[in-house]
Image 1 (cartoon, rainbow, N blue to C red):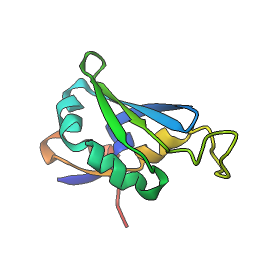
Image 2 (cartoon, helix red, strand yellow; image 1 turned 90 degrees about the vertical axis):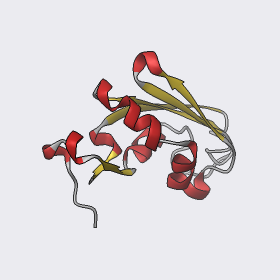
Image 3 (tube, helix red, strand yellow; image 1 turned 135 degrees about the horizontal axis):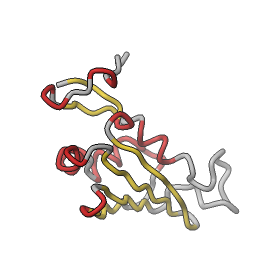
Length: 118
């Protein structure tokens, strides 16, 4: 196994509605979809964001696009009009998720994309 950032094998976009944020994650290579399906669980996403997301997280699979949509309730400190957070609209939530470190199987390893985790 090699430790890689999620950004090395996936890309993402995020958006918001009130105090709800959503992140769409797509495998860069369709061969990685099943791997992501196994490791990118609701529990793993919740652990990654910690106390930042105070509500439920739901994962919707979009197999036809090799991706997932994570909908996170109470994730923006009340939303644009109430939050004191720097990013009240959740536009950077996808970037935050791309910093997740995963154990990537050696046989699928992408040499130039390995990261050294300190």
